Image (cartoon, rainbow, N blue to C red; front, side, top):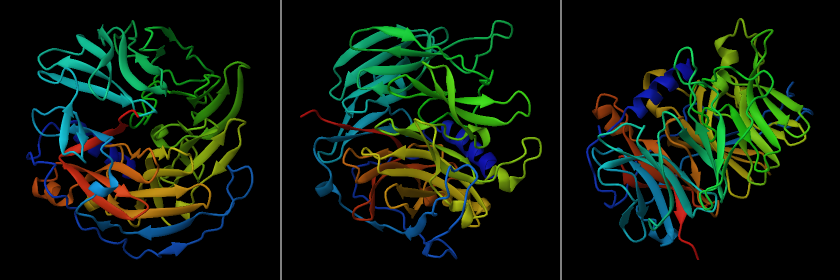
Length: 452
């Protein structure tokens, strides 16, 4: 049920085009007061054995933390830091916010155009996006790659109904992964999973990847777009030797994510997929493993119970196929849904959003999602009293791994507008346990830094 409500709210989010009043993001920053979790023990240490884990693992320790509001964070933000924000105010485009200088920096082709599919390179230096004239369709788009000063290094006209359709991610600082538009000849509908193209915008070279793997879903339709790898149903590692992909058994329709060795044409590992395939596989910064939301309770695909469908936990899968359970939330909560997970730059922590029962209040869903951060080294999980909405905005780590840029539901404004979702962009400082609103009526799209 949580997932069904989540998708409904995600659709509402995507439909938002300026419902909120325009408020200057440079006013004195404040944050909505937060409330502690109701009837939840501050610290618990569950001990369980898991069928999917190769060896029994001690459960994570769960701590609850309610950060304080900070009215001024300029001392913590460098003049070299710029936040890429999507404005929800009517008529305003995405922009880079230099908070330390109090300046908005608009990207090329802003006036008269809308920007789509914005993706920042791993070194925080380059940004790729589509631009489309507001009075035209995506068939007349421009694929742009520029630096944070607006200097364009790559530009190409693209009919997105015939060629590239989505920007998945940066494979590295030189290579973009793009999903190609492909229609089914009989129905003239969009084929899925979508083929993937590699593009080096600095040389103009491109090539297609072979995306045909055993028992792939003919039509991959996740409950929400995979956080990093879109609708391709594939998640390649940076060497392109391994791929994690969405699979469905022809016998019992059981859905899994398979780790596949491309060179050896060999399955390495298989893990049960969460409902709708969750947020998909996300590779660690060093490429040694990927994380994915899977199920602690393996269901019968023909007769799933709600408790089985919503028994999500985080798991890791190593390059050699070792599957390890990372969280034990279902030992504390009856139902759990996980999304939007993101690795810290050094690979030592994972941030994600979590919905859970009995903590969740379905009559007030906008107040129920929480930010969580897992420390891989200590296995300590901290759940924060921060109201986020899973699937609506990704989580972005600062380059030094001490802060998280995220979208947060403005509960008071949302309720005042008859539950039309209204967001603010906030910065969570993990080292100081402080949260600050940095821009009204926006959701974040990444973190850029000026080159040395």
